[in-house]
Image (cartoon, rainbow, N blue to C red):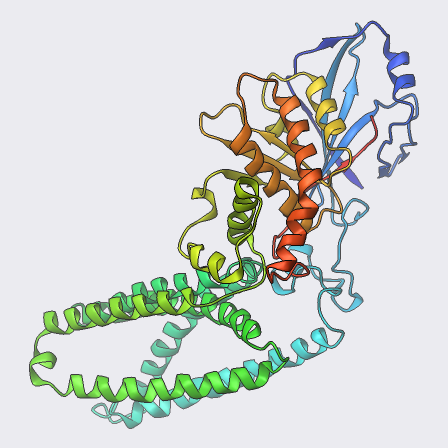
Length: 493
């Protein structure tokens, strides 16, 4: 069953001398999208339906068709039909979540709990392991809750009342604090799991910033003991979010270290380093706390913590800066592409990683590139249908469409990806963006410059890839994610 929504886009008309029938005849090779409905099926290019220019697919299963319409007076316009399918129809959903064991789960929940591309993106034993691991962890945390009550009672909680009820109540508050914090890890893992492979250095650094903010809430519990539970819960929430960022990021870093396939040994030895540092840090912390002046003076305690935390963040930044990845993410791709466009050479792994800014957000890096933009936004308001047809012609051999946003004074490009786009498609769009950024002439026709930039990309991109390989970059592992929220099915025009 399909539910249809119609959206009229206010494109100005362009007059053609041929009537509606000749439009259909000229676009005889145009492919229309079959849509299954209760009343029947559309047939390809039947005379009762306008020709489709392209189809825009959304991750939710919604489909938007861009269609030619004559309007009866020779004026050619674009009509956009937004077509939303219910859960019983999956014809327009290209779903990889097709495991029969989980067919009863809603699509959104599958995306939240399973890796992108499941089951093809993981090994065959992944699902069985996770289904058994889940109740294992549940029973483990039940035991943790019960043991917490005994620990609190042992250190004196509830001893004055003479009953175990006080210790149990304290354990409930303590475990509730941990539970509120766990929500942060749940949210990070479910919604942002696809970020860590792209830029583990950035997210590991952000984890320490967020963890530092959580510690501030813990410190304030001494000033406001009556608000211990909300303050401690907020602190745990922030630290749990930090842990949700830290753990997957560091696993990517460990994988980077294990060049001999010895990931287990690398993780075990890292545990030795971490536990040794933990024991030394705890010992020094106890010595500091043994100072009577520090115990009695809260401002001294806070200033000591702040100075040590700043020193910790600085050391973390230095350690992450020392990492030398030979894989290509978006930040490193920008550095490599800019060097090749300007100087016809690419830097090596050491130089590129040194120049990579760990803390910068992609949205603030110039030139600005917006990926996964809807076609309506790419076309802009008040553009004729000829613009869409020209873009489809220019990018006929590419798996993406790139336009310059002429409504902004500073340089910005929009990129929309076609079905079948890969990481190499993203890298080609980045190369074309930097060439345009360096050579764009606002006085010339924008379409001519787009075509010229694409021609330059065709001529020089293979040389760029060859130089990457010679410089030691892993050209088989390009971590440039293709946005899955929107993709384009192109039809012949």
